[in-house]
Image 1 (cartoon, rainbow, N blue to C red):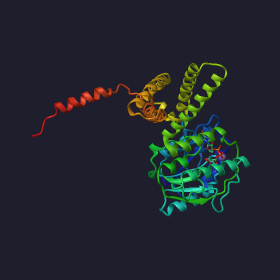
Image 2 (tube, helix red, strand yellow):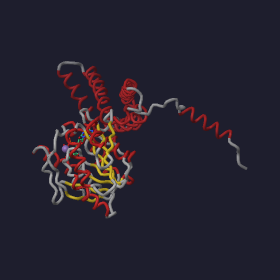
Image 3 (tube, rainbow, N blue to C red):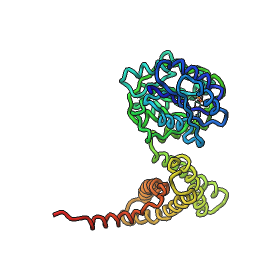
Image 4 (cartoon, protein in one colour):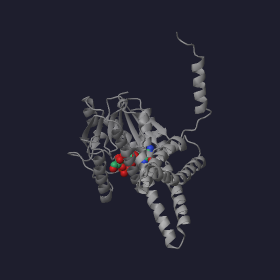
Length: 380
Ligand code: GDD
Ligand code: MN
């Protein structure tokens, strides 16, 4: 097999036959396969099977019952399942013209790049098929923002958000990719330094059906961008900072309506501890949840930690002031920074630690190791 064409689909039944027909015509003469990775709730899987039966090239269907990672997750699954290392990714709605496949391949065949990106923003390219003016501007602005955040990795890439590209699978670290939502190419380019070339293409109108882009995808995108650029710790910090502001706002509101400041402070702190937990579950540690202990247990650990932290911090400030004779503000600042780092470590290493199915405890491992050392034959 020379080429695997990966097509993520979500309710694209009316596009399948036409897509396969045009791809088949475009890749006639080379050994290629089409891999549909489908999360549909409509008749797309049946349509793919029917079309596959008399297609001139192998057409495979991977239907996922759980749409992990959405569009990006589907592409990753396709990359894993592909028969060829040369993998082309394209949408299933014919907005990416199959007739351009040979153009991408020709550029790839030069042998000097790992990825060929089909760009809407290069030379003859165009984004004319984007649904409306809002989408055009959202796309432009997010492209600018993304390129500004990754000036080195995306140097020379005018369209890091395109869903139309060709990669040499062997150059990717598939296990290291964390696809979320629509922007799988960004994930690929940001994680690793790859050699990239671009070819222009015209983003066509949808053949049939409706776009799945949404505000939700936009939020996913911003989270992905932050996570890629700054890692988990800064998302964690961002949520922590928002929580601190919310904490003060709640305290202020409660004292305004006449509550004593001590209960107001306690309520503010507890409410933000809970809301921080919810946000961190959703945006920071979502990829670790599946293998960690249950939600109730995670919440209990997180809640306990934050309360202990709040309780310990005050006496520690007093201790610092009394022993080091520094100002209380500096002492409070030091404890906040230390608490933040410890809190992050506690959450990533303890709260979201993978469940061990019957694996020995750390203490047991140490004892076993000492035992093994003690029993091993000495050398003279
Ligand atoms: N398997 C799977 N799962 N496929 C999905 C999902 C999903 O959750 N969501 C969307 N798709 C498929 C669609 O069926 C289609 O084949 C392709 O992904 C693109 O989705 P569209 O709904 O057509 O998105 P678009 O046209 O608005 O977005 C296009 O432009 C973006 C840049 O502006 C795509 O090319 C994106 O890849 C691109 O990032
Ligand atoms: Mn589309």
